[in-house]
Length: 185
Image 1 (cartoon, one colour):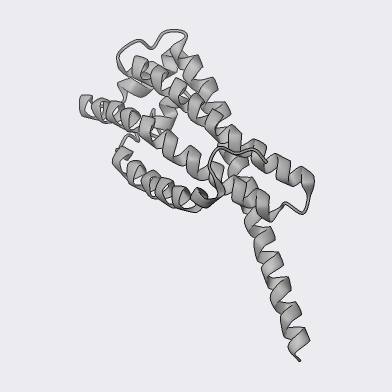
Image 2 (tube, one colour):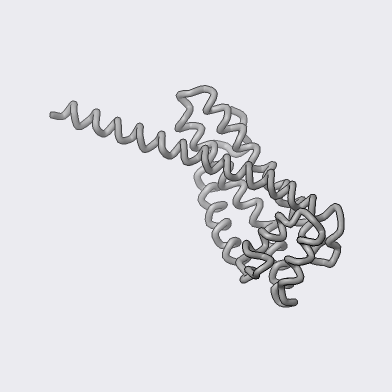
């Protein structure tokens, strides 16, 4: 299947992007949970309506608003890291599920969709920065909401697919081991 990262580079790129995902996630972490923002920055991502966005931002101190903006800045780096990690994990899972042609095609399709999720995350980040800059009117809350919603759906589908690939890998590994044990006895 067509994929832009050559086979020999997939594992090192995966490891590097996964490590960067963890490091940048740590750098983005900020205590933004309030009554009107129970999920921190995600509450703003999913605000959808101007009045909700205003309540979320208004529930943060000036310090927290600055931390939110810095976190969004780091998210421009993070979106490249997590999307590449998840994309490569989908390719790995596709290879594990490859005995089923449709599952292989779904895996590669999801691998490409992970980069669409990153693009949507970038659109969402622009909307978040506009809102954090004081422009909570249309179209920014709705734009952030829809970009985040589709992004989260793609990421969740990718994770579920990777879990299916991991389960298949475990099942096949266990069945091979039990087959080897039976042959030895």
